[in-house]
Length: 210
Image (cartoon, rainbow, N blue to C red; front, side):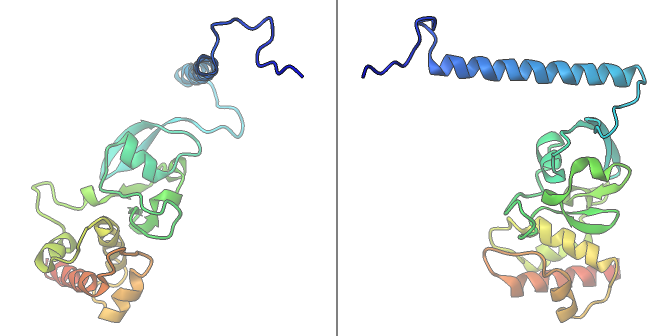
């Protein structure tokens, strides 16, 4: 039986790659047109359709209001890193297990890889970049890391710092076991937990003296 790969009506110069490119381009055009239509509707003060989610929203990040275009399924970690350039928030497991993406939302630590961006409108978001004072003075917990040299590769460092800062808001004078339990949702692939905990305890001490 003769195997046919193209019909007689198929142009000879149409390759699989060109066909895929055409499909992608068409999809992008339709998506862009839809977004422009929604933007025009917003500018005209027309109400959004029931159940829809606005893409252009305002987030309060590190004390500043930032306008950002987000997809309805976009996570806060993705928005912070790739839309706002705040790369101190790390993506590790991307499934709420390692804690490298921890940020504060209204002073409470959250895994930003599992928080949808549009759900935190109207809330105060703080990343590791927002801890230092305006004059560049480090946060006491950040300084504790420097004092104790508490990390090896430091990929998980910002997540531990944010988890510790959040925990110290509820218990500013923890015992070592209490702090260990309080930040136990964060993991270190270098497994240098004793040194990390020492650094976090120094940070708590610095904070009490501040």
